[in-house]
Length: 371
Length: 251
Ligand SMILES: Nc1ncnc2c1ncn2[C@@H]1O[C@H](COP(=O)(O)OP(=O)(O)O)[C@@H](O)[C@H]1O
Ligand SMILES: [Mg+2]
Image (cartoon, rainbow over all chains, first blue to last red; front, side):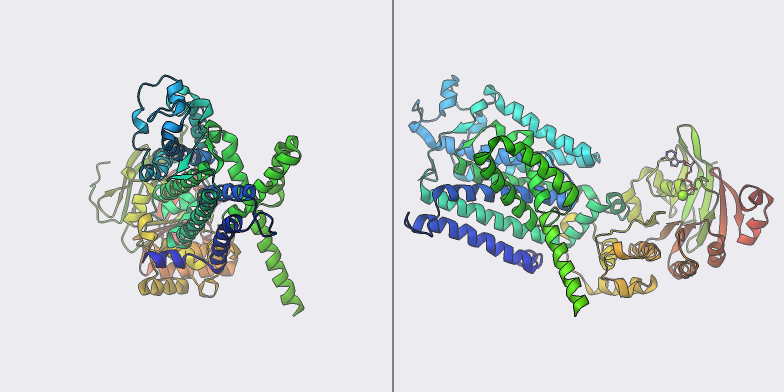
């Protein structure tokens, strides 16, 4: 039943796209690890690392689109779920350092020794176990989303007010995690990771596996989202987006629908964040900066809101432009971002995927006329 | 005032008052609709017709008065979803169909039965649902358009789709607010036929301005004025009532 649920939701285009993601996710790491450095087919390590990062961003974008594009919840706080997943992974990685830290304390991470902690805070217990950290990566963002969504959706907070609440949530986390006495390394966050599951996080082979894992996660999220959106639940979900009160009069309890996608989306964002952290080697409070969540929304808008492929394309394009521009013309990036926002809102309301669909249908119409 | 709470009427309104910032949109309104009946409600703009529908569907809470459905259910205590589940379906004045869904999906969403999110995740279409959809598409005359996006329907077709969505909910009572506003004469005539067909299996309350349409329905009429009932009877009877002529028909 589960396989049928997952399979029927996928159209042909989505299946092809999932295959593409998996192919890239296998080819790029393999070409990095197996090809000799001089070979024209060799993928440099920095490209591998970028690819891994972009894949995580793409998962975050997909998560944003699931609630925004398909349910009309414009979340301006999704980086919070991403960041929380990242912190859970960061805590595991910190505890793997063991005696190799600067202070050589077998239990306490360096920053705790530095801040005169006598013992490990209770909420760090269990994070030396990978399975526990992995469970927390999903649970912590999900539970936050559940709590926030439960209150917001039940009291029928919608539209811009909901957006403000989500933005406030990520801002509150930003301030909280900045504090040293929170026990998460304050301003500096968690860094200097050594290994994950016994393998060095610096090694190319580990990076390759992490990049592949990020592609696998994205592919899985695409399949799950496709199934959800393609089911009868999905029809109801987009109907809630388009005419919420109409759905209430039809007898639907729309809170349940919103809560389910919001929690699912938060879990996806959390996993994306957890895969991101070992690849970039650090997690600090700046991940919670309000601008990050807004940028994720922009990726979705550029790629095409309300499509599954769009957010992935948007995340890759915008981040590629960002990587390139911040290298070539660092002072221009913020203006470019602003301009992009305006252009997309005014000229491309359905993003790149929408534009493509429009061109295709126009060509079809032209063919029909000339035939 | 102390009318029996348990009643044989399908819908029972007694002494209902609703005020907005002191202005009484409904003023001590009483109304009885029998099972199987179709009732037309007429009245000038601002008479409180839509507000009355809001009260019945739980969108607006009355300041005072009783609203009882099906003999026992106190509608003033229930929310929109509960009331819809009880068996009251509503068609809004402005057609609000799901524009980005096909005609068939619109009806599917409205179809009585599955409502909970966790059931819909794995729901598969059944033969019974298929037959029911075909039947409704026939009644509202949208069979050929069933795979079209609702956004592409004409205004009249959207109104019929809404009526179809009401039917799909299989409610005991249909509330229909101004179904023929903006329709052509032919569409108006068709709508009256559709509603008469609907009335064969459902009770209906229809609010309308259009006199030729109300005449075509050929049912008992209630005249609303300034939030209260002014007259009740056949269209010929109420049209002859001097008070009705003064406030409404004679203008
Ligand atoms: N939400 C509201 N707030 C304030 N006044 C309202 C509201 N809804 C309706 N009214 C007023 O109540 C009166 C009755 O409105 P309505 O029921 O829509 O009339 P009808 O449908 O008979 O034309 C009108 O004067 C209208 O302006
Ligand atoms: Mg009205």
